[in-house]
Length: 367
Image 1: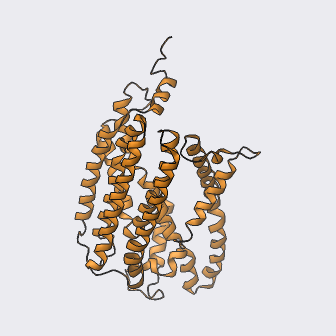
Image 2: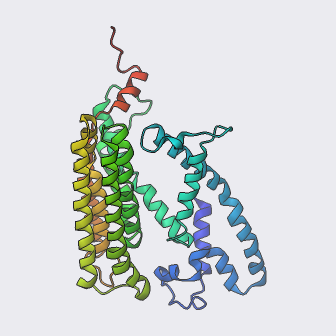
């Protein structure tokens, strides 16, 4: 922690506002300068001090060497994630194929390809890390709910450590996991929302087919139609009508010219998403229906975060309709409601039953 704090102190003190053509203290606009592509290297480069400029080359080399360990770990982890999803029936079986070193080869290639695709819309490090952090933390909302749900569905399970006040800690975990993606801003969350929604057709075609008895041809048609609607809505209503003007002229005036496309996007995607999931619900067996009914709150998390980001101070407006701190208070209240909804929706699953049997909590019936 001391190292990170000292790095921040060094960075704050090293910013030369005049050379960046910015007003002193205009931190928000640093992302539009050369610092967004490599803050410490660019600071050394524009300093004009020969020894610092020379050390910048060392920093560039270190920027490749130092993260490489993390990069290899994430590549392997992502490959195993694809492998595990395929093993559970969420992806095609060819993700399970291993090479002679017992490494899932197609999963590794897929992990590399997905990572490379992030470089297309997010060419700068600051945008990549913001997007990835938001998508990662968004998945953490389940942790707070899981704590409370497992207390209800598996009360006899042995626990080496038992956290007191589960509702309090669970709610706090949920709220903060909800707020961090919200604080990332609308210019990040629109992409996060589109990416998460783009995963639904995979659920239709593989999970619903392999585990819930849905006919693959019907699920595939539904998935392709959903992808087309999502792509067209995101590109034309969000990217072209809101994000492109924002990138061109900066903060936008609060005008129906920009509000209506967003409202249309939310209405279209919410209606289509609910309708398509409900169709899959009708086609599924009883287990699938239970899982779908237990997961509706996830859509609440996704769409409320996007809507609050659009009206709050982390949006694209010069004067946001929901200013600070009321935006964060509102987001926390919404998160609390969603937390109780998620806890109420929690169900015992077959996977949990298997684990409890392995732990000896559930005894095998004698024949």
